[in-house]
Image 1 (cartoon, rainbow, N blue to C red):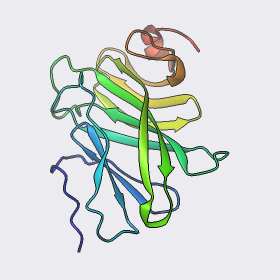
Image 2 (image 1 turned 90 degrees about the horizontal axis):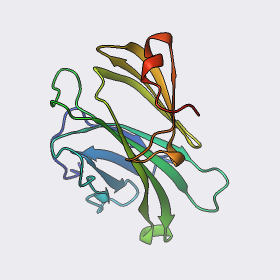
Image 3 (image 1 turned 135 degrees about the horizontal axis):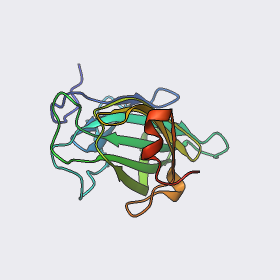
Image 4 (image 1 turned 180 degrees about the horizontal axis):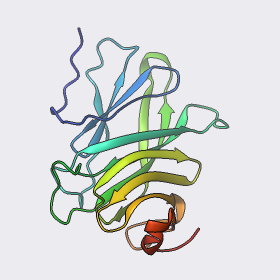
Length: 181
């Protein structure tokens, strides 16, 4: 049995990258990667915790969009970071981080390297039910206490901590639209 050292976090977000070699696991705002083809790999930090995010805010979603036209394994990684409704932190926003991850090296020397592309925040929802990442779009189904359920779609390439490019679907959330796509 292999033990990958990371803090005991609930809920833990996991993603097995296409091809099955790389396992991504959340770790209180950070992401650890484990090479499943190397039995001696203890796992290593791939994405550090964002310095402005709440120190106890867990990662609840990891979504991967593999770039099919890249010559080597390359993918965008969306990290959703929020406190679930059953254990909220007061006035803590929902964080979304987008990273580009590339395979470097070959065979036993292969490893993943991540480059930060953008981060953005939105008001804390009551619950984030589902998320999706494809191309330049990041979508999530959320429930707001005052607005109800809606789907938010972000153009992550044009969003950052100062500005959001967002569209909301469902009438109760129309008031939450900041900037249409």
